[in-house]
Length: 167
Image 1 (cartoon, rainbow, N blue to C red):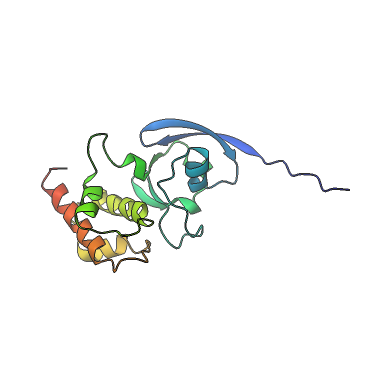
Image 2: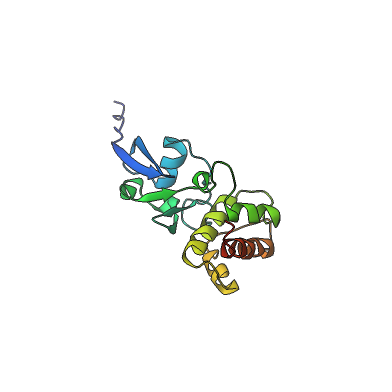
């Protein structure tokens, strides 16, 4: 006798993502990362460790940097989610994205979205951070390609641009 196939329980969710209301039906156990990538096709947030160690899945929820691989999607209803896809304006890059590009802060790009989301969350709360603030904000984001110097320089540059009001 064959074991019965387990029926996967799914849930309808209404999520606010990048300023738009999105409806999705996903398994009840799915994380926000799985929902973004596989339920909604938003693949900018990367799937790395799936245990909160690397930071490449970082998004902002209600303005805070959050690891989407550790966050159940169902817990995000009624909250404002911003992914890397929602960071830029239609006609221009966000100052963080622009600074990362101009400073040569990234190489392979796998950590890029998580780094940028952590940096943006920091600058939203503290527009003129110290180097220590930057180190702390990026402390949960791993990059295997760089020595972090150019990444920190990019956050400093983004803070300068934001401080000038040319954002």
